[in-house]
Length: 294
Ligand SMILES: NC(=O)c1ccc[n+]([C@@H]2O[C@H](COP(=O)([O-])OP(=O)(O)OC[C@H]3O[C@@H](n4cnc5c(N)ncnc54)[C@H](OP(=O)(O)O)[C@@H]3O)[C@@H](O)[C@H]2O)c1
Image (cartoon, rainbow, N blue to C red):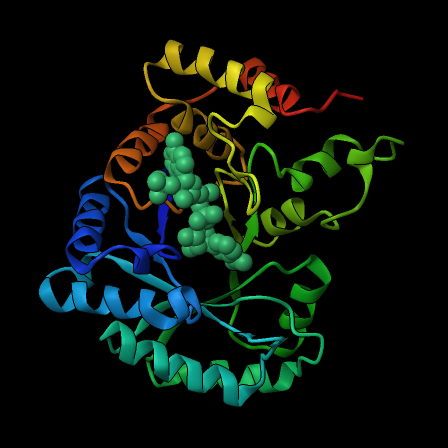
């Protein structure tokens, strides 16, 4: 299967329309097809800018896939039928398109009524407004409930995943061990998604955390950056490409969502698709992120 990188549009509203258009066009030129949005990015401005780019480039829509999300409100989560339907209408209008390729439910809503989700998804699918459905930040049991009550298949799950946020990997490596890595953060999520042909997508693929910023050149992650540097030299790319190639190397065929607003960084990162880390290199990056094998 082709290694997949998608462009996350969470920061798109920070750019002016010309800069945003240049970034999106470069992304397409670099082979990126999937663009990841949410109703809340830039308080709605992310989708609006993208809609303006589509307006300026009428041939673009048919070449790309648009994914957006709904469910996060100020101070609460809402996956009710009314909210899902209203937000899809709002997103379609902002994006200036008549269909969304993939709709994700952004976060679990503790008060979710799965029958309502089924009604909303059925309506959206039959009207042609949404072609495929998925979730974000959800565990296997939550997805099992979708499988029980919702007719439209859940085909995607988007989760935080990177060299410095690797709970989904840790749990599989540290089965039944006493180390902190054995703590159950994800309930076997990566294996569950592979088992059910649910495509995983990684968010914050390069961010250490909101407060720390990017892991690249971050003094809090010196051993990791030293290892990234060595491999970047070996493969004649930059460190960000190696960090993304670590995600792409996993057999779950994870799509790495990258959130850069810089054309330079974008062009550096897409080189990751050509790299296949050896097993030893992949583990050495994992170990230099602060883990020890059991
Ligand atoms: N489902 C969810 O709950 C959820 C949550 C958060 C995000 N997301 C999605 O995931 C996407 C990606 O997440 P993210 O925005 O945190 O992305 P990311 O790719 O992990 O981080 C991007 C940030 O790192 C910076 N950066 C610094 N040095 C860099 C380097 N050498 N190379 C590349 N970037 C560098 C970028 O700055 P420059 O712009 O200057 O490159 C940018 O600010 C978002 O856009 C959004 O679509 C989803």
